[in-house]
Amino acid sequence: MLILGIDTATKVCSVALCRDKEPVAGYEINLGRTHSEGLLPQLNQLFERTGIKKRDIDLIAVSIGPGSFTGLRIGLATAEAIAYAWRIPICGVDTLKAMAYNLPIEGVVMAPVLDAQKGNYYLGMYEWRKGRLSETKQAAVVGGEKLMEKLGSVNKQVVLMGECEKLFSQKLPDNVAIAPDQVRMPKATSVAIAGFEQAAAGGAVEPFAIDINYIRRSEAEELWEKKQKKI
Picture 1 (cartoon, rainbow, N blue to C red):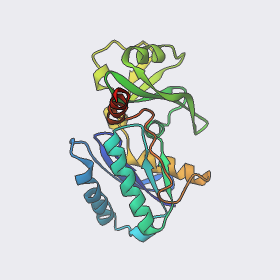
Picture 2 (picture 1 turned 45 degrees about the vertical axis):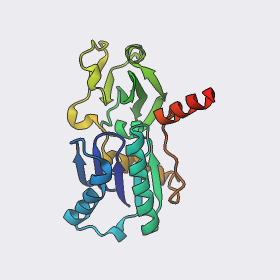
Picture 3 (picture 1 turned 90 degrees about the horizontal axis):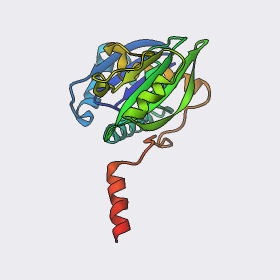
């Protein structure tokens, strides 16, 4: 199966092609450019450089959050439009889960985090067991201090991933290490591989049948609700 992976959940814009679980090509841009400008050119160059025809793609896997509200909408809208045009199924992959695919190491707890603003973080916890990824804690929004408490309470080595730059200046618990830069952020290759496994388990759907997993509401929605209460 040939899978096209797309991840726009953070400032990194990442696209990739995988054949089953084997990466074929990946293209990542981490320059803070808007995904609306860069995503389609990256996709075009990916196909141009590999020589792979669009008609050969069997599945699209796209990161569906949590993450940047705008980035996620751009990625999902693009993926759904392509899947509809090419008449192929699509898989929505949890962003935190996909990040854990960057380091398939057993014996440690993978702790991907993403910035949820206002001192908060989206946190997920996962473990690899006999080649399969298991969620050990349901993803949630936690404050910075609570985050450190949760990581420190784990009775195994924890590998911190994702948008954790603001935590670099803090003293990490003794059982916590930060993943190397090259595997710390979301990757479309990991999204594609996770999507392949979901599809094999019956998780592929038709275009426009996927919802973004925001975990919490956007700031715009919260402000609108506050205004409504004052009316």
